Image 1: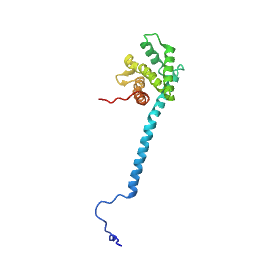
Image 2: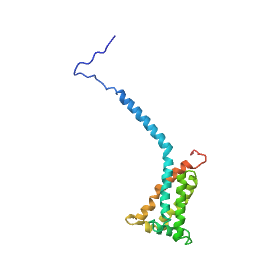
Image 3: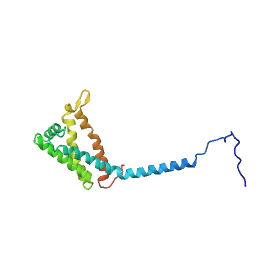
Image 4: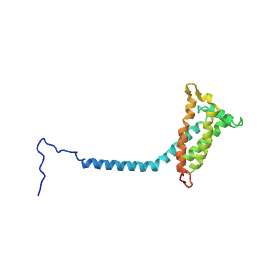
Length: 178
């Protein structure tokens, strides 16, 4: 039986040190955890985004049912007035906006009517972004966007979220780009 002699005290082997087996096991385990996290995110991130987007629209939509509760009341009324050439305005504009936003939000939260909710959001986004064209003086100053302008501009994130949700919710064949 052959045995390898131990190095003399004070002497060390020359060359790279081997990685201990425990580190390799740890890297494998981290890789498994990362794969599990990725699978979890692929399964739940878009449904979570759908529910969160719906909750945001329900929260802001419900506020518009109560006079004086939403800081956007004057902008909502002015936007409806401009888009409908004065036919819709005042409290009716607030109620219509409240219904559109609340119904869209509830449809997204339920998941069952998510496609309908996305259509309602598309309608809402037209109204939400219209002030950028209709009332730029109220949304921007020489120093940049006003608080109201910032409120309108942040909707770009909500639109992006709606597009991500739509990528999962909408049906139909996926065609490859040529």
